[in-house]
View (cartoon, rainbow, N blue to C red):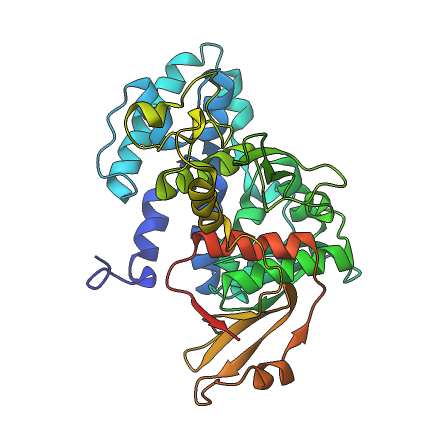
Length: 394
């Protein structure tokens, strides 16, 4: 679609002509307006227009909506939106939304108050320059204050895009980061798994002021195993408490239930014995011939328990030795995460020109890291979701 499109410098003069003495209107103005300013800055021109944001106006004039994104908002208001995420479609929908907002603003006070001159913005002047130096690659990023202290650490599959979201966001944390950030450094990882592990490690090490959530465990729910009076293995999900070791953990109850239902369906397990179907009799799956009757003692415990063991065998790293081979930072490189005797011991990279057949080679180039429950659960969660990842057992 862009192959034959004009370059920005070819249309820059025309944009100046058609926007002269106008107000720049958009849904989430700060994003679109910043892009225009960035492009004109590259041409050596200071582009300035008054702006008005239909996102801000909608939140004030149209209350109690489920979502204020352009797509969902227009759908709820019955405004037709064709060619979603295309310039013409989004622009026409914004025009119709803006007309509705003008009609609703009977006193015209909100419209006047929401016309923003971005030259009065609280955003630091160097944020655009910071973004220019950031890559579009996977990794972790460090936001520093004027004293070079780390105030926030994050990870993303696209560092530039994520930092841009911080710089244009309107939530409280984003606004604080915009005010306090003087520079951003980054560490490209190639692998999302390594980015997750490094983020967790670095947050615990540096304890940045705006990383309150990651300082503590981010996996409060666990999957637990027990044996009932009939010798059937039962599974259950609950909040983790001291003294009880879960098979695996989850960020929230929805993730936990989703995972549990998947292994129930995949391994023909009993809903009742897995704690997702409350009944004094058989479970629902037995009624549709998808459970063999462990819930009413028809299936023998040994047969049922064998499928349970199969379903959960990869959830525990106990006595396991393996390496996860993943993407590197460039096409000539692969990354690895090493687990030995059930403990995460570190990560690293190796060049694809060297065939890795011996685990001793990886140990020589490993970056040692601490084993803890968060790291273990990051690895387990990644293995549950990842596809096409190479596992090297040793």
